[in-house]
Structure formats: structure tokens, C-alpha cells
Length: 245
Image (tube, rainbow, N blue to C red; front, side, top):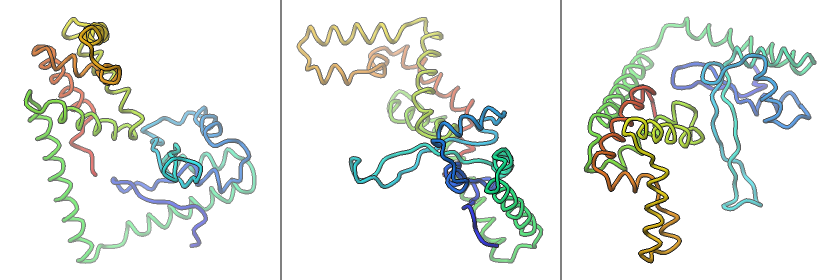
């Protein structure tokens, strides 16, 4: 079968399609993000029908020769429905192609695995199990000795469950709010006061600007313990041990 639109499989073996690849095949005039937002109005749900991720594209005008753009990994069902919504020949062609991809996938699923393939499946399962154990150990080991590095690693893993870096700031913000609520504090106010004191003591503007709420937490033993407890709770909430890297 000729490949009209690239497809791949995620870590769970589900067939996924790039939103931008489909948009390009459909030869649509609408700007990609505007078009995708309109498609979501049909009831598609993030982390159910699609996930958001960033990818690098070449751009000679950008720093480093590339820039990051937002893309979406869609399930095959979503890709088929979106193709049908277009109501044109390209959409019909894309939908029929995805139906054939699904048929081929099901056919492959019914074939018995060779010995080599069985060994690969077992080996992959073992590696993933070890990674899950490592993630659980990281949650348990979060303590006051290396709390900043470990907590930030865990938050990055939480963000991965929500599609990547874009979710990092939202999760970190939620954790700060939960810390304030649990400790009866205001990290924002404490940060402002800390920066004012630093200015009075003659600290450089760049150093003051780099100071953040983690620096506030660093100075208060109780806040540190509350923050670490919240991070652990959120790591469990986002099931970071289920992440495969």
C-alpha cells in the first residue's frame, strides 16, 4: 500500500497521525493552528483523541537554524473523522487511506509472532518495567538533600504525560498554589519581599531577576517539606511511573 500520509505508533502501540501532515495533504488554505482549533470544536478531547507536542523545523532566519512549532498526534479515528469533515476529494481520499491503514494493522495483529519478535516483546517489557521502578524510586527518594533537582525532574515527567514542555509551567503553577494552600502562605508575596531585601543589600539586578519561588522555599524548612509532599502527590496523580522514555 502506497503511503499517502505518514503514520506511526506511540509507546502503547496505537497508530497516530501528525495533524500537520494531514493538514498538508488536504492542501488547506487555512493556517494550521486556526484549522486545528476549529476541528476541535467537533468534540475532540486532548489526551483522549490527540496529544500536543513540539517539533523542530529548519528555519534559516531563526537562531540556531531551526524553530519550534506545535503539532498534534491524533488517533487514527480522529484522523478519519477530520478527513470526512472536509467534504472534498482530498478528504475522501485521506479517509479511505486511513481505513486501509487500519485494516493492514489489524491483519498484522492477527499474525503469530516469530521467536525473534517474541524475544523483543519480552525484552521491551522488561526494560519498561525497570524504567517504571526507577520512576517510582525517584518519587520515594525525594528528600531535602537534593530536593530541587529531583522535584524538577518529576515535574518534567508530569509534563510529558500532558504532551511536553508546554504543560510544565501550568503544573508547576498548580504545585505552587497547592503548596500555598497547604502551608497557609503566599509564595508570591514572599518572593517580592525577598527580592526587595536583596536590592537593599546591593544584589545585582540580574541576580534579583533570577530569584524565584524555589529560592523562597529553600529558606523555610517547613515550606520545603510541604512543597516536596505536594510534588509527590502530583507525581502520583499524573502516574509518572507509567511513562515510557
